[in-house]
Image (cartoon, rainbow, N blue to C red; front, side, top):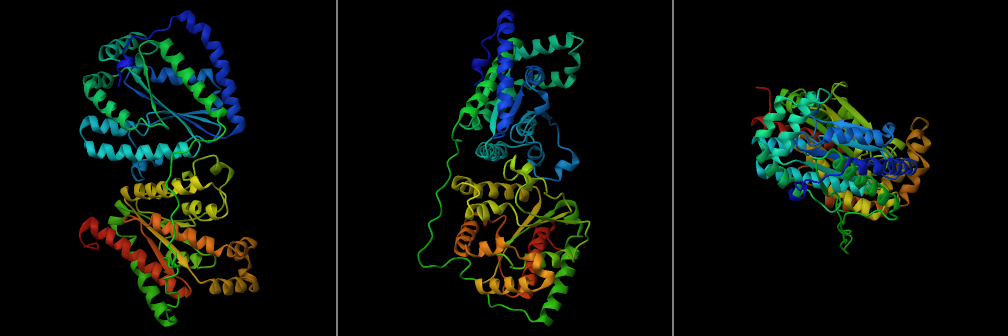
Length: 502
């Protein structure tokens, strides 16, 4: 894989000096056009062996383009704060918005490669991680990003000579450390692991570009031209290319679905409700104070449902059982301008809780396959691919220790109409009813179809949906509380064999 990067590529200094002014002017033109249109971000990954010119190339791009619209993100070992979140959390937070360039010096590939070289990660674990990365990059491209991945290569002898050359120059000697020479000893292992990583993640939508790093002028001109060509092609592209997605689900013809089969007549008497409510609130209060939860787990609660189904009431009963400093309620509305400049899931990644904390989402990332689908706010390919992206997102949460519990609260059309009228006629409830609620009601059947698809495609073993019969608010609130307690208790049992602090 690295043969073409060991041929001794060189460019004489005269040719370099002649070509650079034209290249810089064209790069600036492309950058300003991209900034004006704000249609896509550029994500540049700079990876490779020590001494191959990664830092010099980043500095050069800053000098050739407008640095005000470029950000460089350098990642080393994760901090304590980052270790309490899913692995990709810190990279999601660093993604550039549309119109901007983000350069990753040390990316989502760095840690897996290092762990495999040291033997702390098995080959099978590495491959699983690389599959996650491939899906992540496919999502970035589908969201409009231009992803450029550079691997700077040197032969073992070339790396040795390069380190010595840098060490002799007082302006660059600081770049060479004992660790650089230590890594030279594992050169063969790096080539083996990197070769495998590059092969598995060399996809059509985000291919690797291997650049020989021996000659500064060749490396710089090559990278500059590739970045320019990619930006110009992307700016000229009329229709965004999407990674293929599965076709829509074909529904059965007998009119049965997961919502129609719910028994919405279930009720809970007031006396029983008060008893059950107190029981499960006390139980939840104990669970979220359990040392195993505080030290190892987090809780992510997702509330979706028909308008006026009682999500707010259920959330308030949950909050009453916990310390307000321990949980956060995140109400989700239409995305802001800042959120629209990022991939769809970006705004949700930002709110993931650390260990010992609870995040309650009042509406969630499922808006992509519900309201955005029904109202036509996104294309069919966009919401079709969202199912897999959401499943990956939730899988990463669970892998990092989160307990993910998702609720859909369902009421009948007649009960919804009754509640709408009640809200309209009650002074202190009028804020709960809007013209949009009435418009959504007219699309009842379309929403039912979307919800059934959502459950079919995203109710996984790690994060299943709980459908809540919500015509009776007392019944619904207790079911929600009981479900949270049971799921959390089971997770803690798995951690320690038996629930409790003994």
